[in-house]
Image 1 (cartoon, one colour):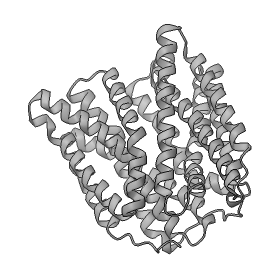
Image 2 (cartoon, helix red, strand yellow; image 1 turned 180 degrees about the horizontal axis):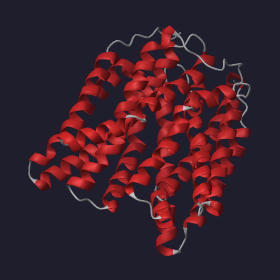
Image 3 (cartoon, helix red, strand yellow; image 1 turned 90 degrees about the horizontal axis):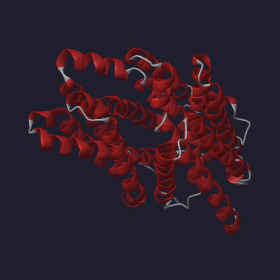
Image 4 (spheres, helix red, strand yellow; image 1 turned 135 degrees about the horizontal axis):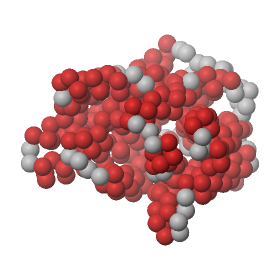
Amino acid sequence: MNPRSYRHNLVLFLCGAALLGAAGGMYETTFNNFISDTFDLSAGARGFLEFPRELPGFLTALFAGLLFFLAETRIAAVCALMIAGGFFGMAFLGDRWAGMLGFMILWSVGMHLLMPIRSSLSLVLAEKGARGKRLGQIRSVGIGASVVGCGVVYIGMRFFGFDYRVIFVLAGIGALVALVLFARMRMPGAHLARPKFVLRKRYWLYYVLAALFGARKQIFITFGPWVLVRIFDQEAYVLAQLWIAASLIGIFFQPMLGHAIDRFGPRVVLMADAVCIIAVCLGYGFSSRIGNGAALWILYACFVGDQLLFGANMAREIYLAQLAESREHVAPTLSLGISINHAVSMSVPAVGGLIWMRFGHHWVFLGAAGVAMAMLFFSSLIRVPQEA
């Protein structure tokens, strides 16, 4: 790829990623309120809704395999089309349960399938030795754009009376523009023939790390905020403020994390990530045993820190890229990794909830600390060949 073509594709990709990031920010900050106001769901029904919403993540490898004949840039465009279809469907037919469910699943398929494709294209657009830097830059663009999307929701609903339909239509328009941008990309390196699925003994450690990440991810997504809400009675706006704070810090933190991966390697960064997660687990599990004021600040720090640490997932992606026998193995293996981590994360909330009810919330986070210890051990086994 010549320098001019490289810059052209990078700009198109960054603009598309930013638009989808803004659309995601609009969706994530309104979806729960939308289904609550429209359907008045019980807590049990809301919990049930997570299964179909997360199921496409488990099926990512299957969806990626079905589209194996398309170039990765074309798959990204198809993902943007599905995301846009989900937004427009919820805008105009989402007031019916079947319509909302169907278009939510369509959105979820597009978003989950886009995850490995976005990572794969990011790696193609990175120079050797600077993959972490490029992934960090691209993720910081997405995070910054999601904050813009949240700002659109706040300003539009607070001062201009936007309803959910307007928000979803705006998000859908953003996704459609991203579709056009992805379709205009011309990347010969992303047009290689790829196998439908890749399952190799060589990648076993990546599969293990993906499974452990699935457990770690869902414990904190489900039970981290629940400590703030149920034990410390924090309002929804407090969690929103923490999310925005983590996003704003993440704009600068993600490139720094990427630079650290380039300098020290995935092994060191993933081991440091595991140690930090252990500290977050202890904060979530035992801060309630100290004064309420100090405990809240510890929990706030845990919430923000945990959100930032999710960025360490790119170290696993870079490890896979360094280990892969050929570049065409990367996207399908990333897809399989997402399926593996969702297979784990779909079962964790039920088990964690039972432990919480029977023994108390601190045992949930002691279990999470055990997962982090396993992450530390397996991350220490990482060995990658030297890049040319």
